[in-house]
Image (cartoon, rainbow, N blue to C red):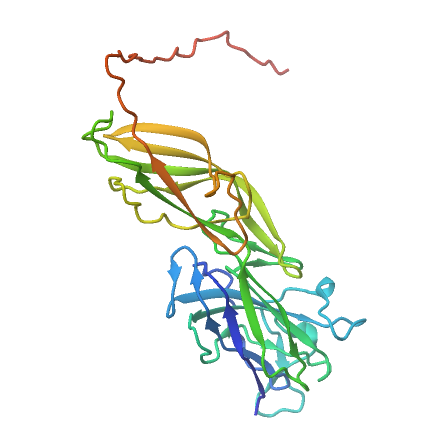
Length: 350
């Protein structure tokens, strides 16, 4: 009978998911000469594109790294080769069609998993394909790590399919799984957030009566985070995240604002930073009002510093302008000068 390793838990601390369904590999059979790694899971609490609660679907890459030839007690990331299939061959002398793994290089080292989030250890979750302990020796050790959301795995990193600020990037540092001869009885992968999370709310500082906006509906059209650092990839060995800069637009409160904060925006996951600049666009009675280069401050009036693994709620408190009694407004209009037609150019080729 095939021996089974049970990974005691995937402890997801404030963990999250992605909805990517790519790179799913169908396992091509069961190896009769190898010990399969199986994983169970539990979740402490998670958030991503949508809030993840117990019962929600989670997805992750599970990655296996063996010990090196020079160090039997640590994973050799320099020798890691991503393989998403198990290459099985006919078992010598078998008349029942049994299959086996010819060597360690015939094993898959990357698996996808999808499971229901739970706060207690549940049933073993399915790995696609199955991950096996080394077959070259029953003393050779291996290690398991995890990355969410799923992405494209190469020799050193996982590259995410989307760099849009909506990916809750998490990393579970490698933990020892033991060997087929001496398996670890309790293996817990702890996924941790590798970004900070930003949400936005908006409210009026006071009622609009007596202001220039009296009788008008004020709503947030959109919010733009300037030069947000968005995760692109994550290193397998260290969990170091590589980012790219882009302006991220977040949907605002589409309903009319009141003196009570509106519901939070969808969360945006970006690298921890200081000196956040945002642009805000309001609709005031259907007319656009734009405010640029707004600094986000903390409760002490200093630039807000966001932290990895923390969720930060940013509140826009909006004060409507008050008309100056007895003063005349300056009326302005605008036009553009259209393009003038310049001399044409030509190229002669002989």
